[in-house]
Image 1: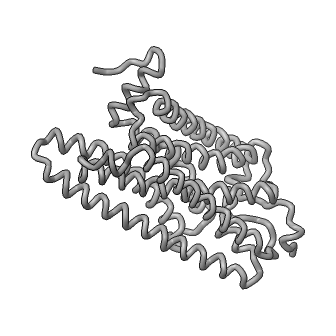
Image 2: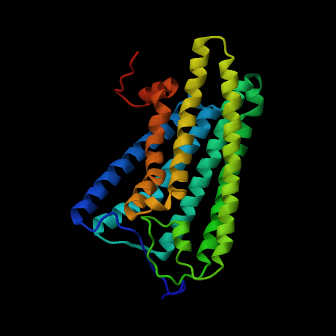
Image 3: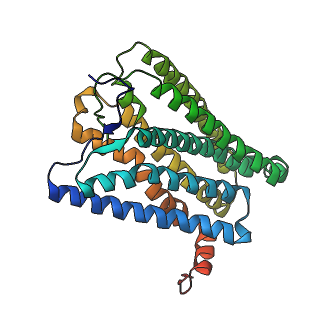
Length: 310
């Protein structure tokens, strides 16, 4: 069995051994990837271009679009390349980078979603203090803290994972490099160190989840006290996309990692991993722009010939 010092590459899980299905996988992933690039790119460009959207809510949405672009670009292009070339290889350095950027961007996304729930809480429950609590300087500091903490968090996980001795081969049961799959290759009890770090991360994630839930409990209580139907509808319209994105992000990830052993077949693992790593970055732009009239108007002003329905 090779040890970690002799491993020069890893073998990723292939979607299919049939050439026709490999090409189908390439085409499907290409379509999803292009949709994600287009959607997140348009949202980022529109928010940066239109000064009417230079508000805390859209500033954090811009950051979220950037994380989605990065997250899907970390895993999908390599998987498409392998399918097109009929190979499973990823270099050792490529695997390290994939783990680092994936952990970094997922942590940043969860942090940003938590901050965005706080933004909606202040906007609806404490509107008179909105400019004070979420001024431009405060928003920059919060976003910088989210990115910096996520960077250090990913650096710690990556260094800890790849410092372990690996002697159970180099085949990963996933179509991208993932920490739990790499830990399965370890033959040392040192992997418990990383497991404890993952447990601590889960506890930290649970705290963020509780903060999001508490924020939305307060938001819904405040919205239900709004006397006018139009006011309630407008408040719900600004919160619903964020709530849907949070639900999609958490439900797919939790189901992928806490699924029953009875559905742990290779095909199910592939489907679930696609659900939590590929689908959210592709559909998030659609969720955020579907009922957001301000964003629709700005998009139609940015894109020549766009027809804005009155």
